[in-house]
Image (cartoon, one colour):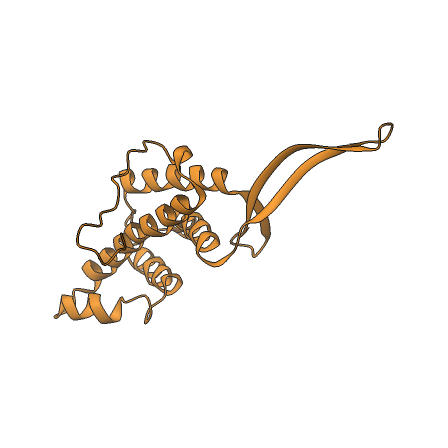
Length: 173
């Protein structure tokens, strides 16, 4: 059976936790769910600017291929400033969004590297492997790149994502 067959259906996901996902499901989950964060930012920009033609504005101006997410964050920062937020409160409010974006970018733009931890027994001249994991390199806001295990990044993403969805994005003091 192939995907063009009308009888083809994707199996319903019965997994209840990110820890049950395989690597490819985690990648899809992160990239797909980050879109909700981007749409929240888009909505704030849309409400603030009050364009005459909202559909055109959303479809063309806020289109990520025209206005990348980093530029949308710059707009959001200026909306926050114009609404009277302090630089510290803006930084604090954007910190989880920037972290989510950093994790998303790691999943979208880098390949996982295999990380093997272990020790060498000098007496018996044998290597002992204690852990094998897949690691993604993530760049933080200071352009420092560090390796993180995929499952740890996924759990961090889920926690930050739910916090952001539950609390929303504050744009006024």
